Image 1 (cartoon, rainbow, N blue to C red):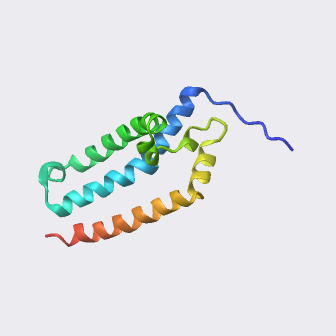
Image 2 (cartoon, one colour):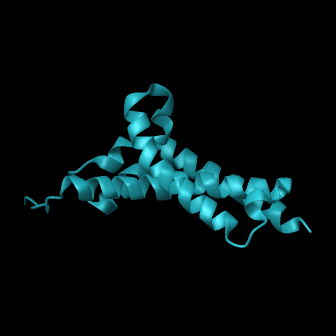
Length: 127
């Protein structure tokens, strides 16, 4: 049985890739950075009410926009670029499912969870 896939526009595919890159690669990285900044006691970003939120959102969006462009052009930026996120033949859910089963993605997710857990405990214990 053959499945008929709905065709995507190139702009819709780019938007999906940007969103996946920002959410699955940028957000955990910059959320961890904010926790580390909180533990260090630097008040420039974490001292204001919405400072951490604004930093994480803007940095993640910037990461989502720049990582695919830099990763496609330069070898040293390939770790932050996942070509699978920009495959027009896959649905949004299929892109996530195929990314999750890759060994490097699993390692990245486990590392992020452990690091954020340790940093969260540190941040909560600061008075």
